[in-house]
Amino acid sequence: MSKLPSAPIYTSEVYLMACKQFDRAADAINLPESIRDRVKHPRRAVVVSLPIKRDDGSVQVFEGYRVQHNFATGPGKGGIRFHPDVTLGEVAALAMWMSWKTALAGLPYGGAKGGVIVDPSRLSAGELERLSRRYMQELIPFVGPHVDVPAPDLGTNETMMGWMADTWSNHLGRFDPAIITGKPLALGGSQGRREATGAGVAYLVSRYLEDLGVPLGEATVAIQGFGNVGGEAARALARRGARIIAISDHTGGYHNARGIDVDKALACVAANRTLADFDGGDAIDNERLLALDCTVLIPAALERVITPENAPRLRCRILAEAANGPTTFAADRWLEENRPDLEIIPDVLCNAGGVIVSYFEWIQNLENYYWTRDEVLEKLFRQLEQAREAVERQRARFKFSRRLAAQTLGIQRVAEAKQARGLFP
Ligand code: GLU
Image (cartoon, rainbow, N blue to C red; front, side, top):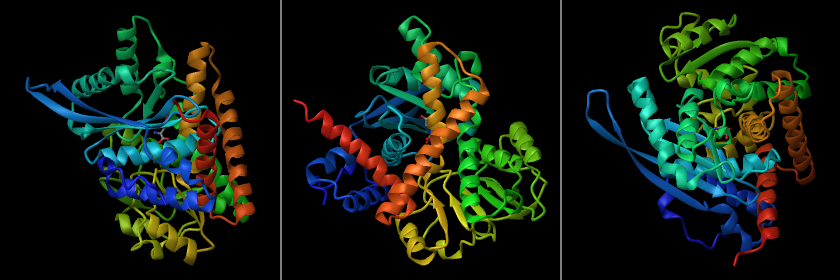
């Protein structure tokens, strides 16, 4: 049991979920009591107040966060989320998952995450630029290429990363692209970064389909969430030969048993930001999409969408967690006990492609030497394969679920680094 009674400032459903996962994993590997609280709770959190001028001349103040969970093996690393439902607890949970994800992937980083409470679709481009710049400005004392390196997440994109890199560079007096990843190519972004998370999801899905003996051409896929991750996963899986039978975003869902025209759906989102006017399938609501008879279900949006209520209705063979934390703790335990045939690719493995290519982008920035897209993707798949094999070995050795195997590996690596460093002073 953890001795620190709680960390009340982070209290929220999603933080509790990340803590429950941690406690279970820590018990499973007998993590010594003396190290548990050090590994579990965030190292520090920064709360910033972000006043910006609206286009109508008024001033509005937004609230933003950066939670730095651990720096044991390198700078903090993790995206920045712009969403109306962001809370400090959610950002803390996401930062904790970044720690296990970077450790599992063998990256020389800790874990961190940022967020701003805002609906970006309600701001003009100018307002978004002022908010992005102000957020970076307020974080200047707490981030840096060797301190904490942000990146995009839900509701943010490469244009915003470019504005943030510029804000940091102006403060420094010289261009310093290694401050942030997921930038436009023109500002030192990496080839392959935009599609990295989705391409990684497609790679892992293909590998697990291979294990099941299902050819890609016979696989059907349903995807919840059609932002950068869901959209790119759809594109990559369709290219590999799978049939995408359903997609959705917050405006609604579409089902087409003959196969969704993914390029058309991507063009729709590029033109209108959402799938609202898409005409390539029949309307389907969220719960029916999750319960579709398909080979692969990919939640690629928010946390906690697979619950004890809908878990018994899942009919997929593979649940590929492209989102962070899409399956609640209780739903996960239910699936483990009642669906031994279901292959879950847990978030910290499934969506690690994004941060792996962020790492490549950061290396390229620090060295000022840039790689081709093929080099990036080849290295990405190799690194993902190593993580996948480590998870499968851990699973076989201890008879763990795949999630427990992935999380225990990440937690163990962070704990080992902390133990090796000792306690200062
Ligand atoms: N936001 C992404 C994630 O959740 C990417 C983080 C990064 O590239 O640093 O993994």
